[in-house]
Length: 591
Image 1 (tube, rainbow, N blue to C red):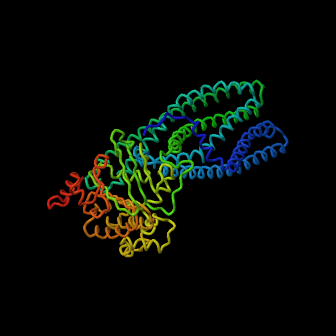
Image 2: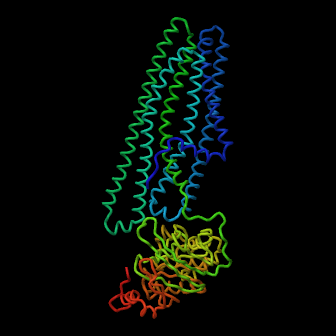
Image 3: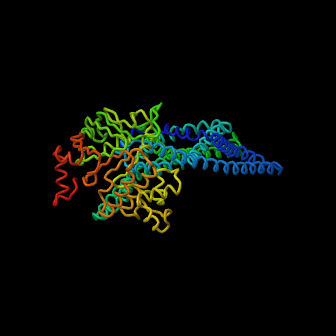
């Protein structure tokens, strides 16, 4: 997926949008941060008094008072650091929780065209790796950056208060320190974003391979996938290594410049001390502030690299947050009649998939289905049958024409209300890694346990569910792997029964089943279809010969409509499909 150029650290301003609701904790964290910085900087004044008065005087009371002052500062610093660490850690955890929630909420609302061009593993990488990096930055690095920036500015101010001459000399070194940070930092920022992208590629490839583990092993592709995964890991490693080298070089350059600077200041200050122009306490305090400034500058430059990585991560997440779904509810959606009657109409619909703009999935498609009618869609692969379902579910909008449900153009309605009146039983149903009951409840999360069991009985699923180790509470495994294909299909039908839709969509619901399971599933489907408008996609014509009407499709157009017997005479395409499937030697389904 193409990404725009980096927006630099400015993108991190979005962090404060998420922190705004917790401004009281932010204020307390900043108060603790400023308090500890002020207490630390005050130690320099205590050192001056300790060296010039406490150590050189004859009265021990001055020594006692100075040491007591320094101890109080130490206690204040410790308490402030404790509160700062707690509040910043809390803010970091809260921020990443809210960010993940916002990103996931946006992802769930994006239309299918987004997922056509975006790998699931890449999305998961942004949702996990990128947000974890930001949590570390907000909870730790940002606090360090702010604290040390305050210490650096405050230290410079106290250096001028202590000795303007030495302070002016120190400031000459600032451009020398800042220059490598700006020059190398720009390159580090780009490499940080590239590194995050390479990590996302690793996750995407691993996620895809694990989801297809049976295919990988069945085709003995383990060694090839292992090699390709190693290449992805090597790419991520090499990118991270280049970034690490640049950051190491940046830190080394800053450290060398700072230490040479301190050496120069000590030399000039020592000459002034010998000449009596400054006291030992002043020189000690100045060196303390110089070390504070140098140390703070080093940490700020190091944290700057973390902030650059965070900017790259935040930029990737902002892309998701700012991606607007193509399918959304209008500002004032049209309300449906209630209860739904299940009347469906396609009025001169044409449509191209975004990923295949040169090939029309539907052309001038018009079809009306009356309430309670069963209509079958047949035809070769690529005829547009599944596209009819996708448009009716409003996963996409047609380019021309209208899709109408219960006399409402579904583009003028809320997509969620449109889909609430439909139930899909796909060819390969997806079951979640949860209990049998939870999977059926997906049809209607508000249903009672009794309703769940009634739906399972109607779907001829109750018996095998009861035989599971824990009945309806049994864990079905990832994607329902503990069940057979026929059992998963009946679970999907139970889910549709519980939804109680007015329009039922059957997408080749029995094409992958053996004869016994097909009979059980057909019995369940027959009960489910009673009194409902039903659209059926089937390659196996034996499953749709009793439909009220059969629509023959080819290359996105309707070639013929009629009953099975009518089409055997009126439609050459249907007759050829029927001959292939019903003849003694033509049992293979149309591909």
